[in-house]
Image (cartoon, rainbow, N blue to C red; front, side, top):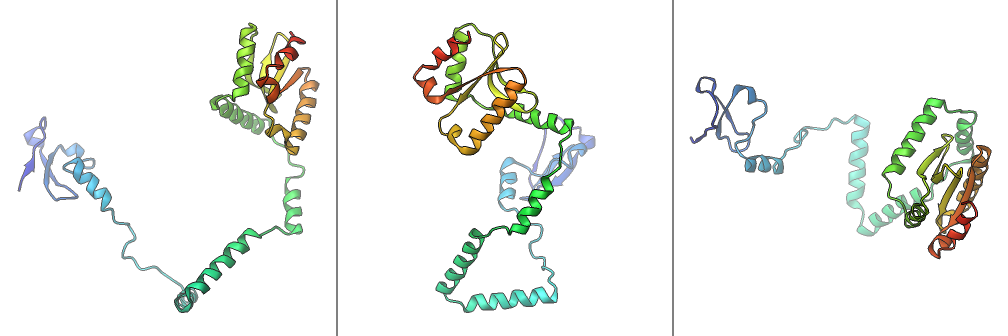
Length: 232
């Protein structure tokens, strides 16, 4: 039987193990017995391809009731035609699509969230998560154009600033105490987003900041520069 020799090992401490794939003897150091299991990379790849599940050949344990139900369902399925099987599958999928919560369940879910107040630590963790997400996110095309215009004007500004641990704004200019938001036409035309923008504007103004909202069309046709001139 051929033995593969590994250079650098002491002859007094030689140890032989069998490859898990081909059974070939491998000469290794005793300290590597747990790590060295294959004689070559090819054997290692072949062993991964021939991986045997740990539960192969094991008998599944069923209770008497579940075993009878399983046998009855298999027998019923075997007697059904392809059309009947297709109809049953459509019924199951349609029943899932039309599922709705009852009014009682909805009321329970609403009441479960009432009166709950987040602690300062929870708010801080949530805000830090937002900051991590927005710092890794690439700016949109209108944000890039806005940032470039502010750079050309020589204004120092901060991107994705957190205001009061509650909202994140696109750009903040400390010298003007001005917050600028670049709003996409589609997203900021949605009803829920319009309400959120109103709450954001009220909160920012209550904190003592000035806010300027620029739409996507204004930024693309360069009319936003005139609106910035009013604050500079």
